[in-house]
Length: 322
Image (cartoon, rainbow, N blue to C red; front, side, top):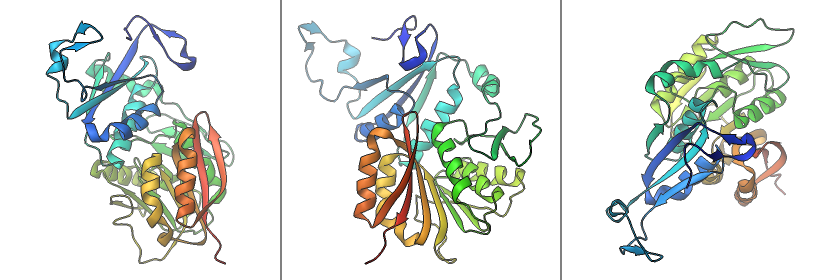
């Protein structure tokens, strides 16, 4: 059992203070929720009392609260050092659960509301994920160097400020695959960061969709603040409401979890042409083979991949027809 005096995780060593992010969901959503939470780190606490039916367990009495627990629900907790960027982790979890269509109750323990409201900004610094794009927090001053492209972000209530590996991987791929005037689609846009990066790299028509209306509002505001008000931001459950009148897209990106990419695989090909670059991230390394298999089953070929820490990003193309 973890305590607040002795917490060990990965490369952190011993941490004396931590923050618990506890997510409660329907029992049927436990597996997907656990996968999302494991993206933060693998040290999870899972509360699932669905199999508890008697008052004894291994010779000892069970606590009455366990016996009376709602067996239709489960909870997953992740513990992260209190001096880490806890807000980014929280936004990441919220965004990915919403993309998966999972209703969740999220509780944060160990940090006061005042801390969350004001002090989180100290964790954001300018970051340069690739060769040109520099992600700068909206409240900081930054003097760009030669050939740097500045993208200013205020995450608000949506995940995506460029600090997470999954976002950084896609920013680097956008630098490689966006060409002047190309038609671009961002699925599960969050803060709008990827569509904004594409626009600043020279993309023409850019479309950004998210299932969460708050994310859509945040993305629209961020696009305006970055001088790209023509980015079309809309609400859509994955591809359901994506614009099709303009034809296929030249670049499509999605920073979402493996299970959702697999769910999207049968439909994404209709938005692609022979030279479309489909850039996928949010894939933990252990699920990469599952995603590749689903893509192959639907006529899509992985032509490249990038890795950072435990994360994988895939470069995908429509398979050549015989």
